[in-house]
Image (tube, rainbow, N blue to C red; front, side):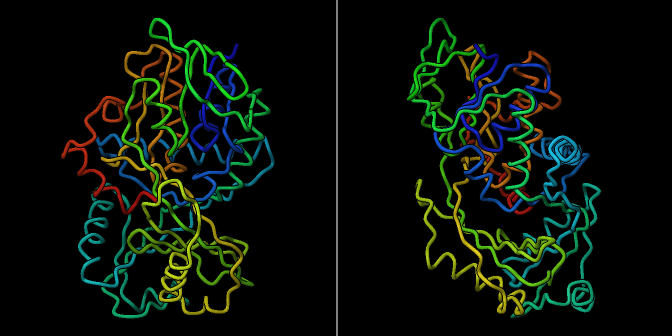
Length: 385
């Protein structure tokens, strides 16, 4: 019997498995499909900076996660020889309308208040540092954020899978959790399409699919899928060097000339289809910022399902009324960024240790409709991709 059975092999589940196995626990990960192929694979890998002096739990989790990403990237490269593309490329944040301007100014003020550099760029300066960035229409404002980082999701997940295997984690694709056997406030077994599986501790890390499973444990996390369509272009050489953000959309350049364009936000249930309108909108957005992208080749498009919550905060902690069941889900657009910190915090909880940060705001039985909590989504919506 395993020490911990993790239900869901995305970025959160694999990160938790890696962390727990590093502390000597026997870990098994099951996934209804193929591990490392859902929302975490589909994202852009943007790691915005966070306020290191903030007492807000989401800021603290982001700060911890960013610090750990630097450490984990080096560890994974040393153990697997896979470079996950972790880079400090910096970013430019834009507003091209009066409606976008207040949010951008508020974001810049928030970053500077937290000790993060956010320099307002006059048009002449922007054209010098990113000559290919020639936005159409009236440019209202632009800020340079030098500390924004990125990594390449597929490479990071490939490295995590390999590192988990090296640490003895058993990874089981095609194993779907259907129900749970519960006796005396403990999960005795996870009932799967391959038969019952037992472990001392069970943790649900199933992204957008977590709510349905959690309901069978008596929990009601307010998690729903939000579809995000993405587009990948290929160029002979990179023509922008920094991440370009405008509202919830972005351009992410890679070292090899590829460029990611994202992302839509759509209530489409569990439909991961790409649509003509969604992809056309992403192309229009990209060409409106960097006209020279008209010569790029379209390599591929895809969509992922981000696990969104009502109040914009993830669920992280023990399932009420159950001694050995935990949930880590609902990270929305920040799943990859928050994966390292989430893994460390949940590992501490599972091992009976005091968490490094206060996670009471992330508890499973919180009132997600609370106006005070819901307001936090607006604060963090732009920087957390």
